Image (cartoon, rainbow, N blue to C red):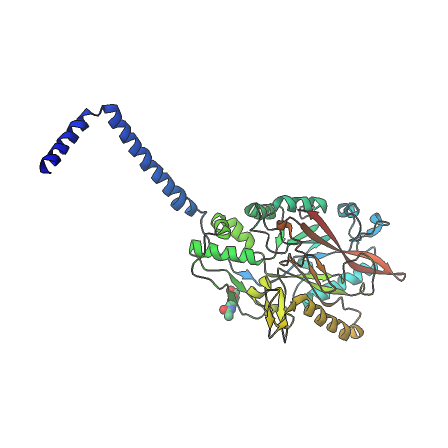
Length: 424
Ligand SMILES: *[C@@H]1O[C@H](CO)[C@@H](O)[C@H](O)[C@H]1NC(C)=O
């Protein structure tokens, strides 16, 4: 054995010395290549994903905001004969760019209306003079990173880059689709306004964990109750985490200006372009991603609930759930909009006779997204706009405007809306 070993060593030494230099060199080359590969893989897997943009503190977010625009009545003469109707093909979208704002010197009706609007603003803690006047408010359902379709929709409605138009994305404009970061960049560059959805919140949670900054905090100026998002300790390396790592301080600045709830001012009842018995009184418009709980005031809503709810649980219909199939004691939950519309209807019936000449609105109408399965749902006091673009269905907008009109020979200002869809 020993002899053999010695012999082996001897032979080995022998053979080693027999290896020509170029082979020994190539062994070294191989070793260098392997080491280089290891370092490269290490960089790709461990270091690169962590090379994220600089992390900033997420500024506090206002839970409820007022829209910074108001709808100034426009003169409809130029599109007379082609009154917008949601049933009409899309070619009839009136060219709002060429329409004029109704001037107060032209019409006492407009003057009276603006007075009412001013009082309405004061009652709601706002100031009409500090707002930008707009011809149209355009609300858009869940984009989910579908930049191509968002551009198509904005082209279809002839969006004017924010000059006389005010566009609000109703939350969940990121994740699932191909171009989340690009949608945020586009929104920044083209003056789009936004509501926060559950996907944006989940992304900001991951952002704050990844960068070690405090989680998003929601400020409520009315109630002085601020809330912070509940954080899990660790997150998976999912799509949202990948997005969270790419988010720049500019994106955070944009997202933190989106409130979860936005007051829109007066909006029409129903969606048809025709005159109806509600034409005289508008509803208070509110934009939110998922919904509101009817039994809590607008300033007392919960951040997790308003971004996730779909149904309400029996027996009191005050506890929301995101699961449409939830039951309590064998009793099925119902869509939150069902209860919301019943309650707003009650308010309407109760108050309609006691309305004063100065009253402008009656009831609250919610524009929301979040429920692609139910899709576009049009009710008197609610309007769901998630038509499932990221599932290959449609992307939907609602255009809202105010115009001079005639009801029974009397000139009034009415609020109207129409729906525009593009295929995805
Ligand atoms: C909520 O935040 C506001 C603004 O930062 C602050 O003024 C207020 O004191 C906070 N309220 C509570 C209860 O912490």
